[in-house]
Amino acid sequence: MADKSLFNITYEWNGQEADEIFAKPIFTDPELLKQFRVVPNVKSKKRLAVDSILQKILKKKAGCGRTPSGEVINISQVDLEVTRVGVDLEQCAATLEDSLLEDQLNTGNDIYNLDGTEIKAYIEKKVKEALALDIPRVGYFADTAHASADYNQFDGVFKVLAAYAATNPGMKIANLPAELPNEDTEEGARAVIALFKDLYKAQSPVLKAIPKDRKKFQVNDEIRDALIDAYTTLGGKASGDIYLKRTQDGEGVDSVFYKGIEVVGHVHWTEIIESDFDGSEQWRMILTDTQNICLGTDRVDDAMSVEIMYHPYQKVNTIDAEFKLGVQILWPELTVYRTSPVVAG
Image (tube, rainbow, N blue to C red; front, side, top):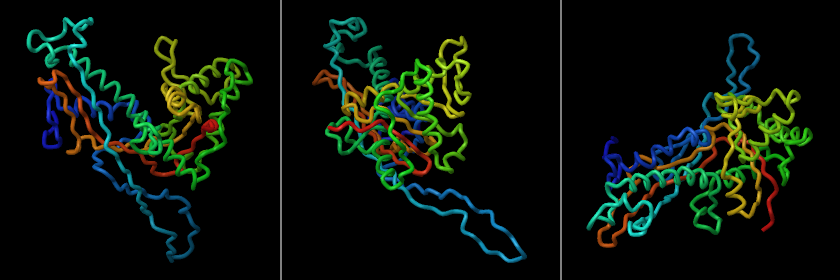
């Protein structure tokens, strides 16, 4: 159990600190770490020291003299700012009395109190799973200018990328088509592969030099599936640049790689864009060093609190959580991306 002095925890549930139940499993999840570099303990703003990329250091030498061409370390500073976000939920046990869960409630005067019931463990699991979806959702799509409180918490990855691309034109390349190519035809399959090829070729020299196992393509899941299907369509004519890692039984696909870089498909991107952003820039592809996109949080900081408790007077069980989130890009030259066209509002 974590040292209580690190937390402002007002309640323990099932013998665990609230941070251990909710925050730690989410922010250390391998799937999240494929997408972001998680920076913990950010109270409000953390100044990150970003060193320049060292290059062009070899010079012709003659004689004993020294003519230094520069310093090794050249630090610039980037601020990672976080905003307080929260969960405010409740569950009245009375609404469960006529359901299949009735036999799992307490009895007598305690019937409204979910403490000690299997339902409480179920609520814990459901909230945790919802946060595991919500944190990447706002991490990518949050926008302080958005009209909805579901998205205006801070500026997420796509808003930050657009801001950097305004002064770093090489970051964003030509638009993806509004409609994905038909990967079931040879022509369409090759067109799908070209979507990745174009992004790969657009890497800056320093991004290209990064080891491939540190880089990821982050794309709509439909684009990932199209690449897999394109590989199948082309059969023996498929590009050797595509590699599929299949499950043990050989039926499913664990991972897909283009030129040795894993393609991560985001299942909910398209649904989010269609339902909450009017389908604008529906298709999106990012190629980046995963250490370059930072997700900041105050996890395990003394400002974080999670309250899970039963209120006898109101006869309601509440979950009230507060923590902080924010996004920052460290080196613009280590990320390149493209989207389909903006849909006019």
